[in-house]
Image 1 (cartoon, one colour):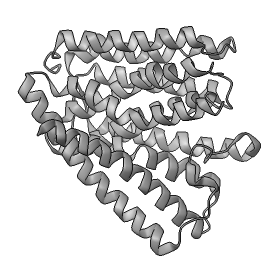
Image 2 (cartoon, helix red, strand yellow; image 1 turned 90 degrees about the horizontal axis):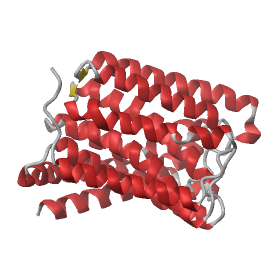
Image 3 (cartoon, helix red, strand yellow; image 1 turned 180 degrees about the vertical axis):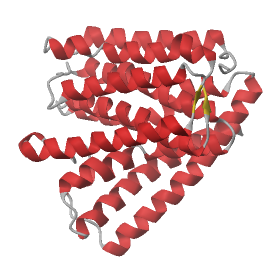
Image 4 (cartoon, rainbow, N blue to C red; image 1 turned 60 degrees about the vertical axis):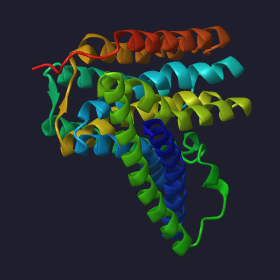
Length: 322
């Protein structure tokens, strides 16, 4: 029953997240909100809504390490799996606009998260800083985009971006339906994940790093593979970097505002450093303007498989730092 709950929850989150974005974008367009603002706010937040709702629900369900594991595991999967898989189809370029700046911000956010995690608990004080930094990042991105609008296509990966917006009543219905779907899906996913963790005697953190993280990364993976088939695999790199920034500053930030996030000792010994290490792997490709080819993609996927095997072997993380 727990497995059915997890699968149903993931399906609901994916569908509801897509519906939420469609309804939000349609409503924003009907209200005359500029495309740039829609892309930097509504689409950015909407596509990460499943992870955000899962994080908040996990904290409210007294499973905060599940939320933390989801973020760390998703960031690792985004680099190794979401970039590695489409690279097997077609070499991926690392020269999308402002990629270097965003990689630097991703690395800085990762280091900041590690520094805060070393204290043993991510409290609301740190969460407030994270959310404020995310606001600064979005604001700065909007200002820079105004100076180079030709380099920005914030809706390029949103399938409904070029279609006629839905009517206001329909957009409102989609928006509300998406929110309800996210809430129900998150409740099923978190509840099922906690039951599985209890049944197998592993920590909620490990479930978050594996099952939940992989599940919530599936939409990004599907989008990246589809883009690669169309010859636009380079878009996956920009999307992954942006998603990782939002995961740290947005999801960890908001979740810790709801309740403290105790950091398992295993995270500070291994998982957070793997997250930082995988992020650093993008630097040489950007600096040397090299493409992520098939061999590198295979290495990325192999490394992700090795990490999952490591988690399966260790079974559970250590208690939170004190």
